[in-house]
Amino acid sequence: MTTLTYLTTTHFDFGAIQQIPAELANAGITRPFIATDKGVKAAGLVDRITDVLGSQMPCSLFDDTPGNPTEAAVMKAFAQYTSEGCDGVLAIGGGSSMDLGKAVGLLAGSGGPLAQYDPMAGGRKRVNAVAPLVAVPTTAGTGSEVSVGFVIIMDDGRKLAFASPHFIPKAAICDPELTLGLPKMMTAATGMDAITHCIEAFLAPTINPPAEGVALDGLWRGWRHLPAAVRDGQDRTARWEMMMCSTEGALSFIKGLGVVHSLSHAAGRIERLNLHHGTLNAIFLPAVLRFNAPECGDKPDRLRQAMGLAPGADIAEAVSAMNREIGLPPGLTAMGIEETDIAGLIEHAKNDMSGLTNPRKATEDDFEALIRASL
Image (cartoon, rainbow, N blue to C red; front, side, top):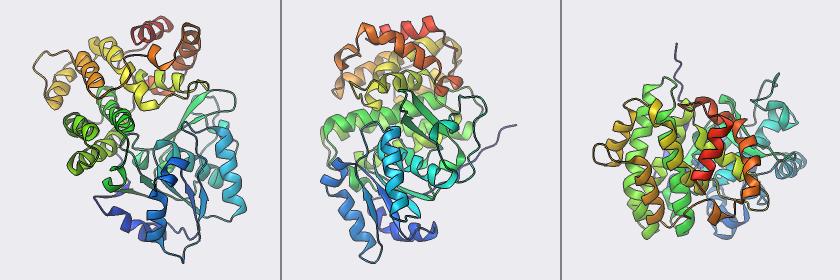
C-alpha cells in the first residue's frame, strides 16, 4: 500500500512575504529565531522581511550559518535560541539556513544530540516534536522549504541526511522577488540542484505517481528557464519558473532520491573545499544517469519529453551540455577533488541514505567508477 501525503502550506508569487506575519501567528510563533547567513543579511533580504514583521515582534537573529551547515553551528544556534526564549524558527535563505533552522527546531522539540536521530543507525531515536518553523527561500534550488529532510555535517566528519514528516515547515513563503539579485553562478548551481531533484525523484522506484507528475512538471519548467535565469537575473518569468521548479523538486522527492545525492553528500563533507551541493549534483548527474539507465524502463522517454529532447536523445549528454551552457565546472578535478579523496568519497557515499531509493544498487566498485567518470 502506498501512502501519499502533501501537507505543506505554500504561498507562492511575487509579494508572498506579506503572508509571513499571518503564518507565524498560525504556527504560534511569537518570538521567532531567524536562521540565516551573512550573505542574505548583507543583501538586505532579512531587513525586507523584518520590515514586514514590524517593530512589535521581537526577533533573535542568527546569521552565522555556514555554506554547508555543521553540527557545531547548529549547537551555537540552539544555545542562542534557548537563551533568548524563542518559540519557533523563521528560516530565511538557501538550503543551508533552512536545514540549520530545522535542526534547531528538532533540538528544541525533541532534545539532543543530533546523532541519535541518524536514520542509518540502528535504534535511532524517535522524533517526538519539532519547534514550529516557517521557511522563506532566497534561492531556487534545495526546496527545503517544503521537504521532510535536512542535511548536517557532523562533528565526526559525516554528512548526515535526517528525515521525518515533523521536519516539514508549517508554511513556505516562496517569493521569487527575493531571488532577483542572485549571482549567475549561484543561480546556475541552485537551478541544477532543483533539476536533479526532479530527475532523481522521478527515477526512484518508489510507487508514487502524483509525485512523479510533480517531478516532470518541475523539470519541464526548470529545463526551459534555467539558461534565461542565468543570463538575466532580473528576468521575472525565469525567476518565477525556477522557484517553482525548486519547490516541485522537493515535493517530488518524498519518493526518494538516488546516488547522485549520495555522492554529493560525500563530497560536500570535505572541509578544505566546502563545495556547493547543487554544483556537485550537476557534475555527478550525467554518470549516474548512464549507470541507472538499464533499470529505468521507459522512464527516460518521459524525461526526454519533459526536457524537450528528441526521441532516443542522450539525456546524460544533454545534462552535460546544460552544465557547460550555464558555466558550471567541467568536473570534480576543477573543483579541487584529488585522487586521495576518492576512498573517502566511496566510504561515505555507500552509507548515505539517498542511495536506498536509487533504481540500481551501487557497489563500492560502482561508486569508484562513477566518481572517476565525473572527474
